[in-house]
Length: 114
Image 1 (cartoon, rainbow, N blue to C red):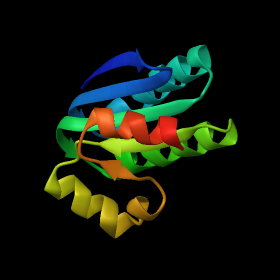
Image 2 (tube, rainbow, N blue to C red):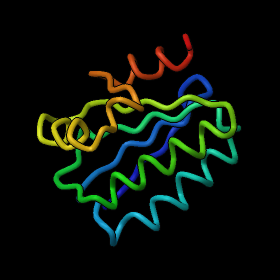
Image 3 (cartoon, helix red, strand yellow):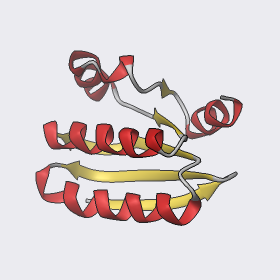
Image 4 (spheres, rainbow, N blue to C red):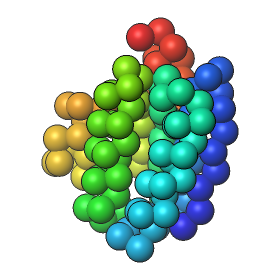
């Protein structure tokens, strides 16, 4: 599991790669929280373009970051979600809480426009 982080117009963008399972979640959680704390919790975009596998601990990671960002008045969006993950997100109810966009650019623009 690897993660790339960058700041795009004041929004923290996290690009995940590999398998998002219980082994990777704790490390990812701490790294994402550190980035959010450094940049003010304005917004978070998580890209799933390069995720090969995700278990329920990945859902916990997403929902925990959503809670953290929301508590600080920020917005969150997901992007580049493959059909398999999208079905998992639908079944879990995640899509009722966090919007999903086709591209990173669209997700960042949605947060900035909100």
